[in-house]
Length: 120
Image 1: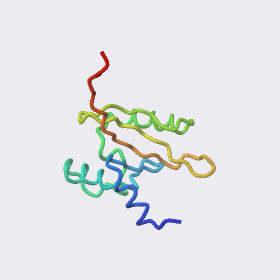
Image 2: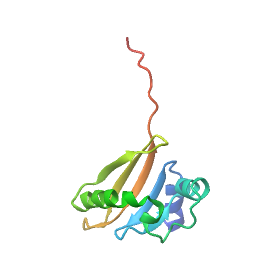
Image 3: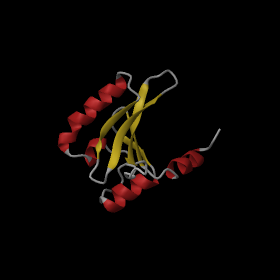
Image 4: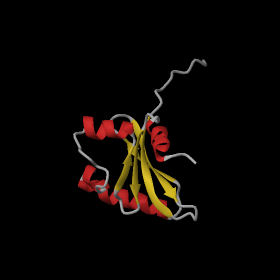
């Protein structure tokens, strides 16, 4: 079994922002890329332990809750939006061994650049 520092190192090696949120919508973990984005670029401070809604616009709340409900109903991942930074934002279910939803993580993944076709 790996120790917590190894798990954190693995998550920090992922170049995409990962934010883990529990089932009460409290932020429990940000990987290195998420910390750099939210703390350095966006000016937030210490989001871990805070409501996810603290770093979202108020009008996003209903959308987040509706997407969470889809995860609760059994979907494993839901598309949120394409961000202004051209990233695909998704919510991915995290379930316990019995399949109960214990939270979700938000993933912000850069879209692949369009490559011109070389086939005529």
